[in-house]
Length: 427
Image (tube, rainbow, N blue to C red):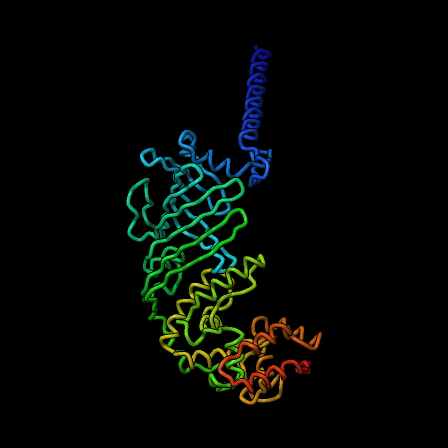
């Protein structure tokens, strides 16, 4: 009897293994990438193999197969996706709670969303659907039920080829306060800030290369209640104020280096953010920040320099309020008096005296451009200056060439000074 039972168990095990092998072979056969098709690796138990991504998408969104996915979940780098099927709408449904979303404009760390719901419907090679992002504690959307009042919502569409997936996402205009409540609900400033204005967003994403373009729409953005007016009488811990005006050589050079549209933007610069996003994608990393002088002042004076989306969003609130409470002249003066200039050195007056043994107000044009060119990486530029006798020469020249509001004769003299500049490095 025991021998018979053993044979039965062994037979069942063999049958199970045979079925598993057969399943793997079928999956590999059905999803195997065709020649030139976009492929990605997947794991099925201990086995790893490549599948054709467009083929997998077509299978997962087909009306005869997608219903079988209902009730299943998939672990992804963004979170666990729970799958469903809406028979009436012929839509595949996906829910992620919580879900992490990478937003390159906000830094390397992903932004966490409490609940993200999306639908997918495919017609040939065209895909479309809608989405909702909900704050903590909101009831999630169910099938074709209307969106919750506090949700960020919108629609998307895509075009699938054998080599790529091109997506266009449109987020509807919504109160900026709602965007903050969904993306960073624990932000302490939300308890006191009064945030006005609306934000909408269009994004184009190309996969698998990851090319991303963002076109935000902002209207009526204002902030009050954060108390940034206290900075009107603030004193810098970096030493004596340089008391520079916007017409000084150093102020002009710093604006050229860090924020060309300083006098025209409302604390944030959408054009610069777009350029920074494009540059970072091209270089494959965070090489260009896109922050205005006002945002940098908020970082120096209030938020700190943690590289996170949460810090960036806090910084934006303070920057918008400071534009209203402080004004451009005071913002520029505060930035110059607190900016880092290598090592533990900060403040324009301290930097001018340390590096050139003169007041910031009496710097020569080329000296001012030199100091401004250091600001993007002050400690690294100082080390380079000390070891090679020069800072980034190309950036130094670009800063000088970008200085505005000077006469032709002044520009010619400045560029001659730049070409001849040989400044002794501090020991």
